[in-house]
Amino acid sequence: MPAADSTDGGPDGIPAGRAGGAPGAAVSAKGATGVGAGGPDGRPPTPVVVSLMLGMALVALDSTIVATAVPQIVGDLGGFSVFSWLFSGYLLAVTVTLPVYGKLSDTFGRKPVLLFGIALFLLGSLLCASAWNMAALIAFRIVQGLGGGALQGTVQTLAADLYPLKERPRIQARMSSVWATSAVAGPALGGLLASYAHWRWIFLINLPLAALALWMITRHLTEPVRSPGRRGRVDWAGALGVFCCGGLLLFALVQGGVAWPWLSAPSLGLLGASAVLAAVVVRVERRAEEPILPGWVWRRRTIAAVNLAMGALGLLMVAPMVFMPTYAQSVLGLGPVGAGLVMSVMTLSWPVTAALSQHVYRRIGFRNTAAVGIALAAVILYSFTLLPYPARPWQPALVMLLLGASLGLFQLPLIVGVQSTVGWAERGTTTASVLFCRQVGQSVGAALLAAVANATIAARLADAPAPGVPGHLDDVAKALEHPGLLPRAAADHLREAVAAAVEHIFLGATAAAVAALLVLLLVAPRRFPVLPELRDE
Image (tube, rainbow, N blue to C red):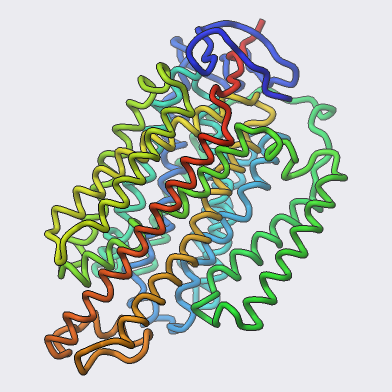
């Protein structure tokens, strides 16, 4: 259904409570949003909201909770050389399934896809807790990720279904808070469970939470029954193609520069195969009656611009989330807890400005609000490179606090805005495409920025004026873990090399923020074509 322009209301045509219908819209007798609202004030039942937050917390928590338990897991199961796939396999499975689940939720409804995702995530958690070696644990983490993809995309879509436009910032801000808190708390919780219980409890604690979410969704979430004639045929060939193409591309990005050089036969072969598969997917999707990745996702300026901007967001987020803890520990000399605090202050300001962003975009529009946020983020990211060496801990912490505030002003208006330009039957696909692009941007960013960091450190090691500096990149991590074993001059030079590498990383993140700003200014329409709220007549 094309997004028609709407002109009554604010600068993006935000409707002022106007009733109206649209072809293909799925609505419920219980509410105005296509799902059962339940309460007398039109808001969804509390158990449904709680279950959505539980689902979001499960996905976010499991993306980071394993990190601090790796020594215990490796000590028990072995497999040190491949343990990184505990993270990569999970994230890869989440990413490549997002478009598939998005389309399925538009075809069959949100509830069955969400129930399937929770059940699969629960099964994966149970299997992970019973793993007998590292290969089995990695395989079961992928099963977890297959369920996590359904959770992440469908929860975000349901948040838009359940609330009218004027209240979406509130629920989306809550979801952002849950995501940020869970992601930051994951390493600490994983370390506590591994130290004082057993690493298997990292996965066992998911069981009661997932079961509770499953029960509440089953009992309290209602959706209108869609007639089989309106569902269309499922594009299973396209789903398989998207899954394989995305899997190969992300596998190449994750392993490139780590398991083998970028210009080696494995990297070039995987990238070439993913390009061939991409061409095949395009051909298949053009012929499909109901494609998994429909062409309108990229033909509509609003959705295409938001996808590109969110891809840039995923790329720039690699700098604070991946490299800031290393900077805090290796350069500032903080412990793991202190390093986590420096990074986590970003999660304090992000939800606050996200919740307040509605007061801004109602005055100046979705695009302009997001442009202001990402412009501020570019300035803040660049300011990190101006910090003195060595910086005091409060200085990078202040940068992270301001960065979170600017990104809250950037991300939420884009998500709320793009979800408001489509009807129920297209919202799952649209939301999934946005999340998919952000995840791909993060994978690309991790590969590109890691290459920048490695090149910077390698150049500094080659020009080391002091003896005792590690001669190879593989030895840097060990040297940084025990800097006291190095001569003082060598340790100082190594810290300066890491500081220079992280500065270059933040310059790359600044470039990504500028790219997102240009996309919003040059590609996104000045006014988002917001649809009127869809209500029963």
